[in-house]
Amino acid sequence: MALFSKYYKYTPYLYFIAVTAYWFTQVNRTEGITAYPILLFSLPFLWQIIKPNRKLNAILGITFVCLSSYLILALLSHALHLVPKSNAFSQYFTYGGLFAVINFIMAVWMIRNTIKKSF
Image (cartoon, rainbow, N blue to C red):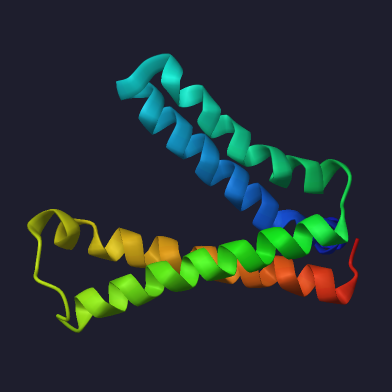
């Protein structure tokens, strides 16, 4: 349990690295070598694990809170039928909603790490 309590603050960074790796593998299957710039998105999160920086942490947290909020608003507008229904979007509604909520939680966790000075 002591090991978990020592490293739990790195959970959001590992989550975003895993999402980037998944995104890379999915795009790499169809696009090939043009997918490699996607790996650059994981560098700030990897940097936060290796050498934490409070300013970078705050910037990443605020950016992803804004992006996740936008995704949640888009999903709510679809759920409330404010936009016309699309079969392609409806198919991924549950996965997209789960993804947006988890992204929001992880981004708030990163901001919490900045405020708590847990580095």
